[in-house]
Amino acid sequence: AASFGFVIIAPRSCPEHYCTNFYKDQLQCITAAKEGLASTGLESVDWLKSVGIFGHSMGGAATMISAGKDGYDIAAAFFLHPYYTVHAEDIKVPAVHGTGSSDQICPAEEVKNGFDANPFYPKVFAEIEGATHLEPNSSGGRNKHRWDAYVPRLFMCHLNGDSDACDLIYGSTSDSLCYTDIEMTDCEVSVGGTGDRNDWA
Image (cartoon, rainbow, N blue to C red; front, side):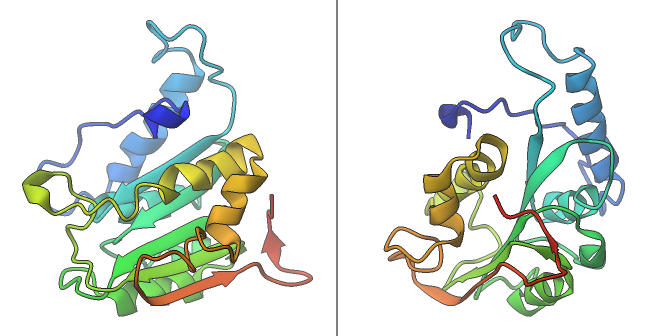
């Protein structure tokens, strides 16, 4: 995401256990950045712009909690193989729910339940065929880089108003998430209807 012009802040949190309060660290990072506490050496950054949040596993679960919080200018969220989805019904921003058919730790069915419970539109459910829970990891050669193009594009869409990026997330071209040559077990884009909570770019 940094190569796309975004500043990434990654708190070092939750070395063990279930990290149930990790979302508080995530939100505190946003607060610190907007108050100028994280701007050392980055004076040219517009810290008052909206932010995008994403996380994997427990970080994905924490991101789901954060996505339901007001007052942080969160514009979009990407949940990668989230560990639990009990807070999905509180989501208040456009989101992608990403998983894999071979994830034995956070089964795709649970991630799909979170997608179904998410009341906010637009939203995407994407299940990569054969992807394990460690699909996003960079260690051990596990990362096949199949999510890499889409995480920053979600933020380019909703933070920068980039219509081409929006097409890659929600569209139907050959490069779009649900139509790419990445084999998907299931992929669903839902933009909602009249009366739905919607923030279509």
